[in-house]
Length: 470
Length: 69
Image (cartoon, rainbow over all chains, first blue to last red):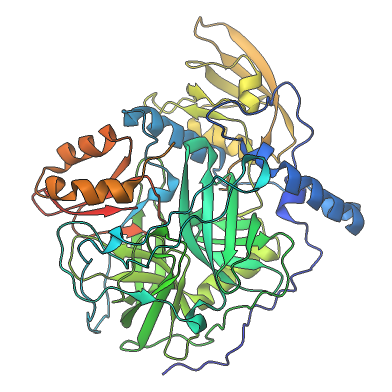
């Protein structure tokens, strides 16, 4: 039995005076250490954030100097993108490689779980129809023309190509199912790619709940309200990678219809519908199923660079969820959101999906909106130096690559250099460097001591910028 | 520019199914796409990457499904 009140219980005032992430994370004006982008038309994070940052900074001015409080990021943010680059180099074929958004997960427990597996597997060829694609190209999104969705297709449903069995795919979501949901396209500037997912509208002025892995590594985010078709630029309010939750704020948004959120957990056997941006088509689709178990734990295993996370208390569902559904809604029979679609099983014809209970996700969202910068939560965007580290150097912070158009690129740091200290504090490990960077805020100027390839001790200074989403 | 995994997977899935995962990975990479190999019992986070191809494998390490994204 599910008790709902058909109200969105997200009670944080959208216009609270907590500083907007973009405003706080505004890098100081660029200098020679942060040259403009030059590679593949990809803007670095700071550059793409610049217009919004200026705007938000204006808001901060209006709100008073208190809004400029500097944030300190304690999570290992900088190396997230750094490691991604390491794997890019190892991918071969010139292809962009594994990245944070491509984590895989491994189920580690399955307690409980009586429910039925009513959904069939991935339909053959189902995914090949109706993909209009969600391009970045076209019309005005920042300086790169992060354009609107291309084509509409005919909702080819979900499914894989080849193999598996096909039974009951999905249907185009109804207007009622679409209400309160958005599609999300994250531009992964440093990884030359993009990622699509789904989000849940929390407030009328555009606060959005989604999975962290949908926006992790993003340098720009485009969100479309699927009820109205209006698209918005989004800023990262904050993230909690350990809970796989992120909160976004749409710019210049008003009058959005928040989702109806259930206020009680579902029960095993309840009918549910997963609504999401299946296959990244930009059109929401719905997959029916049932709650098959509660309180599930899964452990994400890293794919490529992304570190694994253990997620607890998940809802297990039998709906045919597929890529693109992350961040989307698992709705009960009344159409109220009971969970946030996050993962699905692999290797079986019967799809098992996992969703974060909406109450859990909202709890994290409230912390984020309240600005609780903790070991797990990053508020806004992390400080970013722009180096990747060699993973095969017995833990030392050896530079594998200096990313172009980053603060590091404006220094003499080079591949093979060993970073030995930041601001006078000894660095003896990769994690140590990451921690040192994430203690800073964008705009901070740091001094880096390092040993170059010739064994000479040197120093460099760099002004950190706001990096990709954590 | 990332490739279109959907179109590529539709065209090549039949040839990939039954291949060892490593061989299929090479095919995906050779097409300029990013492979993701999923072994039985794994789960996948569900962001959609338009240039990613997920190769679902069986216990013997052979590809059983090819999923774009």
